[in-house]
Image (cartoon, rainbow over all chains, first blue to last red; front, side, top):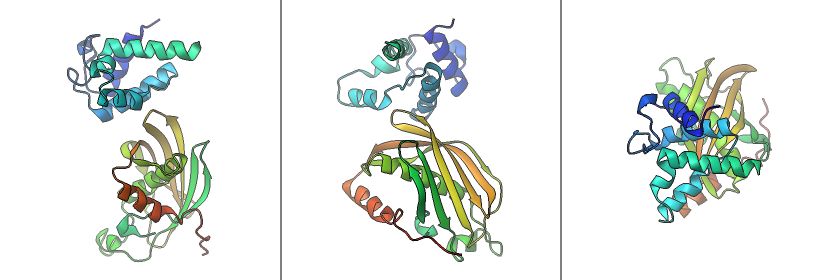
Length: 93
Length: 155
């Protein structure tokens, strides 16, 4: 079974022009991979469907804008994968 | 419909806020400066305006779902096909269905029929945000408040 990171990396490479070999757990989706906000929506759409969750992008953006969270908490891929795992766990709880 | 002002919807025929569907009726004007330019001597509705009619239909359903409190706009077009030319005076039957309910964005399947024919269909991304200003919010409320009360258009 693929890990969350493998699935996320595959989705990013299929949705954007980033080669899969460049997608690492420590990569920042925006700063390192150059994914813009609209491409990120496509990625979130695909991840929502793959994992059967609703990634709370609005809430995350609000938390970052209000200084309650760092951009890295959500947009560094290993952290994004951890958030996805939490959402999947919460859904099946 | 006021084509030049992008007021493209005439009447809500059906709306299901929970189900995420809407059906809109509208009739193209016989004359418009847009038809004078697209194309001289051969007036047809530009494909981008077919797309905008479908976008506004889906967007209106979401705007109503959010109790007219949030601003909905086109974020992207995942696919669009224009299958038939649409001429001045034609009546349009527009449908939209939300297929994915994201956080701050939605995916909708939309279609536009003219004279019983499929004229266009598209899968679009709609983004939902707070209104940029109270004036924009009030203006949109004013320009759409007739949609669910407009009388049926007869041939």
